[in-house]
Image (cartoon, rainbow, N blue to C red; front, side, top):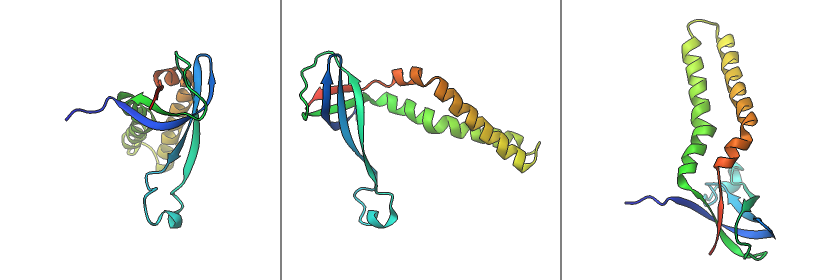
Length: 138
């Protein structure tokens, strides 16, 4: 079974300009189909707009398009957003729990996560350049 190299979602063209197109897409939560979504409050959805560079400008406002990204970038995003912070937290907690008090270990672990977040903010432009979206007609 081959794996699809792209992740694509349907979007609507909101604005066109030379060199880029602005698309909007409705993001819905994973529990949108759940019968109890009205009770738990986590069945929220939001509208997102993205500015996507494109070579040809043959898109029209209101046109339905496919907004795509390489699936390998999803793994990279997962690593950056979840796995690296979890590893930092676990390494600091497990390596320092016998040496210091619980309060000190907790504060150091939170400080490690804050340092990671600050590094992500400093390198955000570089990271954002790696996540490239593409727009294709449906």
